[in-house]
Image (cartoon, rainbow over all chains, first blue to last red; front, top):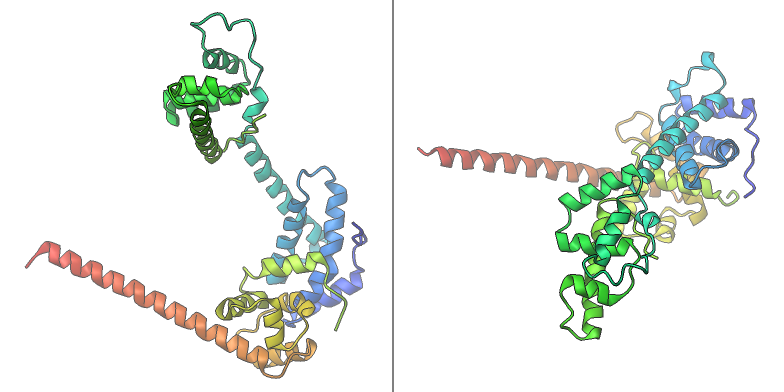
Length: 216
Length: 125
Protein backbone atom coordinates (compact mmCIF):
# COMPACT_ATOMS: atom_id res chain seq x y z
CA UNK A 1 0.00 0.00 0.00
CA UNK A 2 1.36 3.46 -0.84
CA UNK A 3 1.55 5.24 2.46
CA UNK A 4 3.68 8.41 2.54
CA UNK A 5 6.93 7.23 4.12
CA UNK A 6 8.54 10.63 4.64
CA UNK A 7 7.75 12.35 7.89
CA UNK A 8 6.03 15.73 7.69
CA UNK A 9 8.28 18.76 7.71
CA UNK A 10 9.39 20.06 11.10
CA UNK A 11 7.64 23.36 10.40
CA UNK A 12 4.33 21.69 9.59
CA UNK A 13 4.50 19.53 12.67
CA UNK A 14 5.53 22.41 14.91
CA UNK A 15 2.70 24.61 13.64
CA UNK A 16 0.02 22.04 14.44
CA UNK A 17 1.71 21.19 17.73
CA UNK A 18 1.44 24.82 18.80
CA UNK A 19 -2.27 24.71 17.98
CA UNK A 20 -2.58 21.62 20.14
CA UNK A 21 -0.94 23.41 23.03
CA UNK A 22 -3.29 26.34 22.48
CA UNK A 23 -6.21 23.89 22.76
CA UNK A 24 -7.52 24.58 19.28
CA UNK A 25 -10.36 22.01 19.05
CA UNK A 26 -9.60 21.15 15.42
CA UNK A 27 -5.85 20.64 15.99
CA UNK A 28 -6.02 16.95 17.05
CA UNK A 29 -7.62 16.01 13.74
CA UNK A 30 -5.03 17.93 11.72
CA UNK A 31 -2.20 16.46 13.74
CA UNK A 32 -3.50 12.91 13.36
CA UNK A 33 -3.89 13.39 9.63
CA UNK A 34 -0.32 14.63 9.39
CA UNK A 35 1.38 11.81 11.27
CA UNK A 36 -0.68 8.60 11.17
CA UNK A 37 0.27 7.38 7.69
CA UNK A 38 4.00 8.28 7.83
CA UNK A 39 4.39 6.75 11.29
CA UNK A 40 2.69 3.57 10.15
CA UNK A 41 4.84 3.40 7.02
CA UNK A 42 8.07 3.90 8.94
CA UNK A 43 7.22 1.28 11.53
CA UNK A 44 6.29 -1.14 8.77
CA UNK A 45 9.73 -0.61 7.24
CA UNK A 46 11.49 -1.14 10.56
CA UNK A 47 9.38 -4.08 11.61
CA UNK A 48 8.84 -5.79 8.28
CA UNK A 49 8.54 -9.22 9.86
CA UNK A 50 5.79 -8.38 12.34
CA UNK A 51 3.41 -11.37 12.22
CA UNK A 52 0.24 -9.29 12.24
CA UNK A 53 0.26 -5.83 10.55
CA UNK A 54 -2.70 -4.83 12.70
CA UNK A 55 -0.30 -4.67 15.66
CA UNK A 56 1.50 -1.79 13.95
CA UNK A 57 -1.69 0.07 13.16
CA UNK A 58 -2.95 -0.29 16.72
CA UNK A 59 0.37 0.82 18.21
CA UNK A 60 0.57 3.90 16.00
CA UNK A 61 -3.08 4.82 16.49
CA UNK A 62 -3.08 4.44 20.26
CA UNK A 63 0.22 6.20 20.76
CA UNK A 64 -0.92 9.15 18.64
CA UNK A 65 -4.28 9.38 20.42
CA UNK A 66 -2.51 9.35 23.78
CA UNK A 67 -0.13 12.05 22.60
CA UNK A 68 -3.07 14.21 21.47
CA UNK A 69 -4.56 13.92 24.94
CA UNK A 70 -1.26 14.88 26.60
CA UNK A 71 0.80 17.01 24.20
CA UNK A 72 2.71 18.65 27.06
CA UNK A 73 4.46 15.39 27.87
CA UNK A 74 6.75 16.05 24.92
CA UNK A 75 9.91 17.88 26.02
CA UNK A 76 11.48 19.70 23.04
CA UNK A 77 14.88 19.82 24.74
CA UNK A 78 15.08 16.02 24.54
CA UNK A 79 14.76 15.74 20.78
CA UNK A 80 12.51 16.34 17.82
CA UNK A 81 8.77 15.85 18.00
CA UNK A 82 8.88 13.34 15.17
CA UNK A 83 11.48 11.29 17.03
CA UNK A 84 9.30 11.41 20.15
CA UNK A 85 6.26 10.17 18.23
CA UNK A 86 8.30 7.36 16.67
CA UNK A 87 9.66 6.33 20.06
CA UNK A 88 6.16 6.26 21.55
CA UNK A 89 4.74 4.20 18.71
CA UNK A 90 7.71 1.85 18.75
CA UNK A 91 7.40 1.37 22.51
CA UNK A 92 3.71 0.54 22.16
CA UNK A 93 4.51 -1.85 19.33
CA UNK A 94 7.17 -3.67 21.35
CA UNK A 95 4.75 -4.09 24.23
CA UNK A 96 2.10 -5.37 21.84
CA UNK A 97 4.59 -7.80 20.29
CA UNK A 98 5.53 -9.16 23.71
CA UNK A 99 1.86 -9.70 24.54
CA UNK A 100 1.33 -11.31 21.14
CA UNK A 101 4.26 -13.69 21.61
CA UNK A 102 3.10 -14.64 25.11
CA UNK A 103 -0.35 -15.35 23.70
CA UNK A 104 1.08 -17.45 20.90
CA UNK A 105 3.17 -19.48 23.34
CA UNK A 106 0.12 -20.02 25.49
CA UNK A 107 -1.83 -21.33 22.50
CA UNK A 108 0.17 -24.41 21.68
CA UNK A 109 -0.82 -26.05 18.44
CA UNK A 110 -1.40 -29.58 19.66
CA UNK A 111 -1.79 -30.94 16.16
CA UNK A 112 1.95 -30.45 15.68
CA UNK A 113 2.57 -33.55 17.77
CA UNK A 114 0.04 -35.72 16.03
CA UNK A 115 1.86 -38.68 14.56
CA UNK A 116 0.33 -41.37 12.41
CA UNK A 117 -0.63 -44.59 14.13
CA UNK A 118 1.75 -47.40 13.38
CA UNK A 119 0.21 -50.26 11.45
CA UNK A 120 2.17 -52.98 13.20
CA UNK A 121 0.51 -53.02 16.59
CA UNK A 122 -3.07 -53.66 15.53
CA UNK A 123 -2.78 -57.35 16.39
CA UNK A 124 -1.83 -56.57 20.00
CA UNK A 125 -5.23 -56.30 21.57
CA UNK A 126 -3.85 -55.19 24.93
CA UNK A 127 -2.35 -52.02 23.40
CA UNK A 128 -5.33 -49.89 22.49
CA UNK A 129 -4.97 -47.01 20.01
CA UNK A 130 -5.23 -44.27 22.63
CA UNK A 131 -2.49 -45.91 24.74
CA UNK A 132 -0.14 -46.01 21.82
CA UNK A 133 -0.99 -42.39 21.01
CA UNK A 134 -0.36 -41.34 24.59
CA UNK A 135 3.04 -42.99 24.56
CA UNK A 136 3.92 -40.93 21.51
CA UNK A 137 2.75 -37.71 23.18
CA UNK A 138 5.20 -38.40 25.99
CA UNK A 139 7.97 -37.80 23.46
CA UNK A 140 6.79 -34.28 22.69
CA UNK A 141 8.52 -31.06 23.77
CA UNK A 142 8.59 -30.34 27.56
CA UNK A 143 6.23 -27.29 27.54
CA UNK A 144 3.67 -29.29 25.64
CA UNK A 145 4.07 -32.27 27.95
CA UNK A 146 3.49 -29.97 30.89
CA UNK A 147 0.33 -28.55 29.36
CA UNK A 148 -0.96 -32.01 28.47
CA UNK A 149 -0.33 -33.31 31.97
CA UNK A 150 -2.18 -30.35 33.46
CA UNK A 151 -5.13 -30.83 31.11
CA UNK A 152 -5.18 -34.53 31.86
CA UNK A 153 -5.21 -34.14 35.61
CA UNK A 154 -7.35 -31.02 35.98
CA UNK A 155 -9.68 -30.83 33.05
CA UNK A 156 -10.72 -34.10 31.54
CA UNK A 157 -12.24 -37.30 32.82
CA UNK A 158 -10.26 -40.46 31.91
CA UNK A 159 -12.62 -41.27 29.05
CA UNK A 160 -12.52 -37.71 27.73
CA UNK A 161 -8.75 -37.81 27.92
CA UNK A 162 -8.65 -40.94 25.77
CA UNK A 163 -10.77 -39.20 23.17
CA UNK A 164 -8.53 -36.13 23.23
CA UNK A 165 -5.48 -38.32 22.73
CA UNK A 166 -7.09 -40.05 19.78
CA UNK A 167 -8.00 -36.68 18.29
CA UNK A 168 -4.42 -35.48 18.72
CA UNK A 169 -3.25 -38.60 17.01
CA UNK A 170 -5.35 -37.75 14.02
CA UNK A 171 -7.54 -40.84 14.43
CA UNK A 172 -10.46 -40.48 12.03
CA UNK A 173 -12.31 -43.80 12.39
CA UNK A 174 -15.63 -43.40 14.19
CA UNK A 175 -15.33 -46.99 15.40
CA UNK A 176 -12.19 -46.17 17.43
CA UNK A 177 -13.99 -43.36 19.26
CA UNK A 178 -17.19 -45.37 19.65
CA UNK A 179 -15.21 -48.19 21.27
CA UNK A 180 -13.70 -45.84 23.87
CA UNK A 181 -17.07 -44.23 24.55
CA UNK A 182 -18.88 -47.57 24.83
CA UNK A 183 -21.21 -46.72 21.97
CA UNK A 184 -20.70 -49.77 19.80
CA UNK A 185 -24.22 -51.01 20.51
CA UNK A 186 -25.63 -48.04 18.54
CA UNK A 187 -26.19 -47.96 14.79
CA UNK A 188 -23.27 -46.65 12.73
CA UNK A 189 -25.18 -43.47 11.94
CA UNK A 190 -25.99 -42.85 15.59
CA UNK A 191 -22.38 -43.59 16.59
CA UNK A 192 -21.22 -40.99 14.10
CA UNK A 193 -23.57 -38.37 15.56
CA UNK A 194 -22.64 -39.07 19.17
CA UNK A 195 -18.91 -39.16 18.44
CA UNK A 196 -19.12 -35.86 16.57
CA UNK A 197 -20.97 -34.26 19.47
CA UNK A 198 -18.33 -35.40 21.98
CA UNK A 199 -15.45 -34.30 19.78
CA UNK A 200 -16.99 -30.85 19.18
CA UNK A 201 -17.46 -30.36 22.90
CA UNK A 202 -13.89 -31.38 23.68
CA UNK A 203 -12.56 -29.11 20.96
CA UNK A 204 -14.40 -26.17 22.55
CA UNK A 205 -13.02 -27.00 25.97
CA UNK A 206 -9.50 -27.26 24.62
CA UNK A 207 -9.95 -23.86 23.04
CA UNK A 208 -11.10 -22.37 26.33
CA UNK A 209 -7.87 -23.64 27.88
CA UNK A 210 -5.85 -21.81 25.25
CA UNK A 211 -5.19 -24.82 23.06
CA UNK A 212 -5.46 -24.26 19.35
CA UNK A 213 -6.53 -27.57 17.91
CA UNK A 214 -5.85 -27.84 14.20
CA UNK A 215 -7.30 -31.25 13.44
CA UNK A 216 -6.09 -32.74 10.23
CA UNK B 1 -15.23 19.76 2.05
CA UNK B 2 -11.82 18.00 1.90
CA UNK B 3 -10.66 14.74 0.32
CA UNK B 4 -11.86 11.46 1.78
CA UNK B 5 -10.12 10.57 5.03
CA UNK B 6 -7.43 7.89 4.90
CA UNK B 7 -8.24 4.43 6.33
CA UNK B 8 -5.81 5.18 9.17
CA UNK B 9 -7.76 8.31 10.07
CA UNK B 10 -11.07 6.45 9.97
CA UNK B 11 -9.63 3.73 12.21
CA UNK B 12 -8.25 6.31 14.65
CA UNK B 13 -11.64 7.99 14.81
CA UNK B 14 -13.25 4.66 15.73
CA UNK B 15 -10.76 4.04 18.51
CA UNK B 16 -11.05 7.61 19.74
CA UNK B 17 -14.69 6.93 20.62
CA UNK B 18 -13.41 5.14 23.73
CA UNK B 19 -11.64 8.28 24.94
CA UNK B 20 -13.63 11.14 26.44
CA UNK B 21 -11.07 13.70 25.23
CA UNK B 22 -12.26 13.32 21.66
CA UNK B 23 -15.51 14.47 20.11
CA UNK B 24 -15.80 10.88 18.84
CA UNK B 25 -16.96 9.83 22.30
CA UNK B 26 -19.88 12.30 22.25
CA UNK B 27 -20.79 11.39 18.68
CA UNK B 28 -20.87 7.68 19.65
CA UNK B 29 -23.05 8.40 22.69
CA UNK B 30 -25.44 10.43 20.53
CA UNK B 31 -25.59 7.65 17.94
CA UNK B 32 -26.32 5.10 20.65
CA UNK B 33 -28.98 7.32 22.19
CA UNK B 34 -30.83 7.81 18.91
CA UNK B 35 -29.80 4.53 17.28
CA UNK B 36 -28.29 6.35 14.32
CA UNK B 37 -25.88 5.10 11.71
CA UNK B 38 -23.24 7.36 10.18
CA UNK B 39 -25.63 8.67 7.55
CA UNK B 40 -28.16 9.59 10.21
CA UNK B 41 -25.54 11.29 12.34
CA UNK B 42 -24.18 13.24 9.37
CA UNK B 43 -27.73 14.27 8.48
CA UNK B 44 -28.41 15.51 12.00
CA UNK B 45 -25.23 17.55 12.00
CA UNK B 46 -25.64 18.75 8.45
CA UNK B 47 -22.32 17.47 7.15
CA UNK B 48 -21.14 14.81 4.73
CA UNK B 49 -20.53 11.33 6.23
CA UNK B 50 -16.92 11.55 4.96
CA UNK B 51 -16.34 14.47 7.32
CA UNK B 52 -17.33 12.50 10.41
CA UNK B 53 -13.92 10.86 11.10
CA UNK B 54 -12.19 14.26 11.07
CA UNK B 55 -14.86 15.79 13.26
CA UNK B 56 -14.59 12.81 15.59
CA UNK B 57 -10.86 13.37 16.05
CA UNK B 58 -11.35 16.94 17.25
CA UNK B 59 -11.16 17.85 20.91
CA UNK B 60 -14.53 17.52 22.62
CA UNK B 61 -15.71 20.85 23.98
CA UNK B 62 -16.43 20.55 27.68
CA UNK B 63 -19.62 22.17 28.94
CA UNK B 64 -18.00 23.56 32.06
CA UNK B 65 -15.09 25.12 30.18
CA UNK B 66 -15.00 28.87 29.60
CA UNK B 67 -14.23 28.23 25.94
CA UNK B 68 -17.13 25.84 25.38
CA UNK B 69 -19.24 28.05 23.13
CA UNK B 70 -16.22 29.34 21.23
CA UNK B 71 -15.04 25.77 20.64
CA UNK B 72 -18.46 24.70 19.39
CA UNK B 73 -18.64 27.73 17.14
CA UNK B 74 -15.19 27.04 15.72
CA UNK B 75 -16.03 23.40 15.00
CA UNK B 76 -19.34 24.40 13.43
CA UNK B 77 -17.61 26.82 11.10
CA UNK B 78 -14.70 24.55 10.31
CA UNK B 79 -16.88 21.61 9.33
CA UNK B 80 -19.71 23.75 7.95
CA UNK B 81 -22.25 22.13 10.24
CA UNK B 82 -25.81 23.33 10.53
CA UNK B 83 -26.08 26.11 13.09
CA UNK B 84 -26.85 24.94 16.58
CA UNK B 85 -26.71 21.20 15.78
CA UNK B 86 -23.40 20.40 17.44
CA UNK B 87 -24.34 22.49 20.47
CA UNK B 88 -27.63 20.62 20.79
CA UNK B 89 -25.87 17.27 20.39
CA UNK B 90 -23.34 18.04 23.10
CA UNK B 91 -26.01 19.35 25.47
CA UNK B 92 -28.10 16.21 24.98
CA UNK B 93 -25.14 13.91 25.56
CA UNK B 94 -24.08 15.82 28.66
CA UNK B 95 -27.61 15.73 30.04
CA UNK B 96 -27.83 12.01 29.42
CA UNK B 97 -24.46 11.38 31.06
CA UNK B 98 -25.50 13.45 34.08
CA UNK B 99 -28.74 11.51 34.34
CA UNK B 100 -26.95 8.17 34.08
CA UNK B 101 -24.47 9.21 36.76
CA UNK B 102 -27.31 10.36 39.00
CA UNK B 103 -29.21 7.10 38.53
CA UNK B 104 -26.11 5.00 39.14
CA UNK B 105 -25.46 6.86 42.39
CA UNK B 106 -29.11 6.57 43.45
CA UNK B 107 -29.02 2.86 42.75
CA UNK B 108 -25.80 2.47 44.73
CA UNK B 109 -27.32 4.44 47.62
CA UNK B 110 -30.44 2.24 47.56
CA UNK B 111 -28.27 -0.87 47.68
CA UNK B 112 -26.34 0.47 50.65
CA UNK B 113 -29.54 1.39 52.47
CA UNK B 114 -31.01 -2.04 51.79
CA UNK B 115 -27.84 -3.70 53.05
CA UNK B 116 -27.97 -1.58 56.21
CA UNK B 117 -31.64 -2.53 56.79
CA UNK B 118 -30.84 -6.21 56.23
CA UNK B 119 -28.03 -6.00 58.76
CA UNK B 120 -30.30 -4.31 61.32
CA UNK B 121 -32.93 -6.99 60.81
CA UNK B 122 -30.35 -9.74 61.23
CA UNK B 123 -29.10 -8.22 64.46
CA UNK B 124 -32.67 -7.95 65.73
CA UNK B 125 -34.18 -5.50 68.27
